Amino acid sequence: MHQENMVIVGAGHSGARAAQALRANGWQERITIIDAEGRTPYERPPLSKAVLKGERAAEVAPLFPAGYLAENGIDFLSGIGATAIDRAGQRLALSDGNTLPYHRLLLATGAIPRDLGVPGRDASGIYPLRNAADAESIAQRLQPGVDIVIVGGGLIGLEAASAAISRGCNVTVVEAGPRLMMRAVPAPLSSKIRHHHESKGVRFLFGRRVVGFGQHAGGLNSVSLNDGTTLTCSASIISIGVLPRTELAERAGLTLDNGVAVNCFLQTSDPYIYAAGDASSFALGPGVRMRLECWKNAEDQGSVVARNMMGGCEPYLPFPWMWSDQFDQTMQIAGIADGAVDHVERQCEDGTLLIYHLDDAEKIQAVSGFGSIREVSRGVRAGQMLMERGLRPSRQALQDPNCDLRMFAKAVVA
Image 1 (spheres, helix red, strand yellow):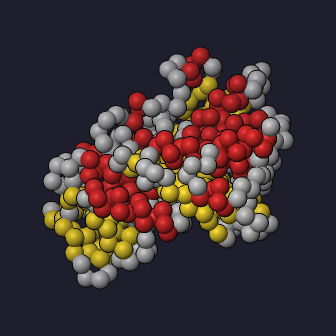
Image 2 (cartoon, rainbow, N blue to C red; image 1 turned 135 degrees about the vertical axis):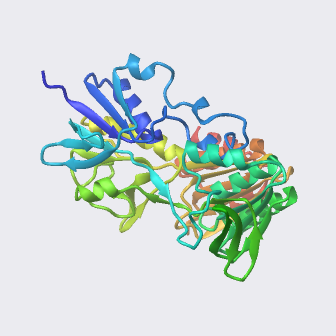
């Protein structure tokens, strides 16, 4: 008997959630997940936090409950990659030489770290930070007194710096731009994050680029910068962003645009093929496409794409949210700040800084914060409520730490 097969390439967050959502929404036939990594699917956020700190192994945070795949009849092909898509025949070629028919195909292929194409890059002791193997290798290097150079002052680089300092390492962060997290947060928040890291012992070098790695007996022993500075170290973490994994889609002739281009239903240029997660780009507005590299995007897209693969027509409406733990502080960002023309700062009594990003009509586009988990969580959640309901509190209300914006939102709705 012919059995219709939903095939998912990639067992990261969006792929795993899609498989779960297919079963939860009543898909009774076959589901197959293909993943080349060869591990039990796991959560990625702990990699740059608890795993680097040596507090847990990657598999301690599985994406599937124990026994879930077998109990729900989901085939998991671990350690096997997808090599080509036969769109006309609706079959997927696998790295073991087999082919697999699909009713609908989901590309949840994720992203790969950007690399530094500089001399000495092949020395041992130089690591990206993207998967469990990377995190485990780095964690072994984080020993008291070891000199670590982190290339890139973005979110992952800062979390790695926090973990390394907590384990007694000497940490230098090299950032090509003039400040931290240039694309993600405004200058006041960037400055606050920098000062907190410096108070814990992190050293920052801004406006510098790595031009080479020195090695001795094949192992890393220094990092050379474009201003002539040489930093002695025995390990370096490269955290300069990621690139969407689009090779499979490109070979199949699917439309690409800053990733695998999808419509509002997360459908590619082939109506039988969908894409979700870090590899997919969706329309944010006329002529503007976006990829969101965050946990919530993968979570939400996984659920939406599953229903659409089953025949639904549910548009994906992004409400991005992300968080980061750095030392004893937390950072959260909700919404999309692109298009914001102004911002209002809220300085809380405990030192937490919240920033509300406004459009030209003074409507909240996004909110970001750094400080105590209590104040950041409360302030960001209030911003989410206001954004979802299209409310525009006064600038004075946004600025006043004694004004409870959550109650304001509830009162207006009531």
